[in-house]
Image (cartoon, rainbow, N blue to C red; front, side, top):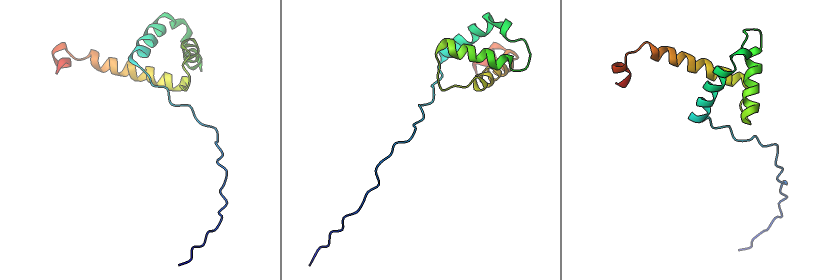
Length: 96
């Protein structure tokens, strides 16, 4: 039984740009966001893009990479909605 060996050309492995891992948001980040948002309410004027610009400031101050200001704005809106839904419940109902 004869074996045949064929030389195969292999493509060089080229590593492309890698995306950094997604930022893992913590409870501490949420606490800091709430405090920062209350202390910097003057940045949220209601004008177009004011809140997006303000959230960019928060991300820069905290050194958070991989999160867009638009996503942080959505996170804040979700926190407010959750708070409003909880504030209508009694303490006994909230424990259940």
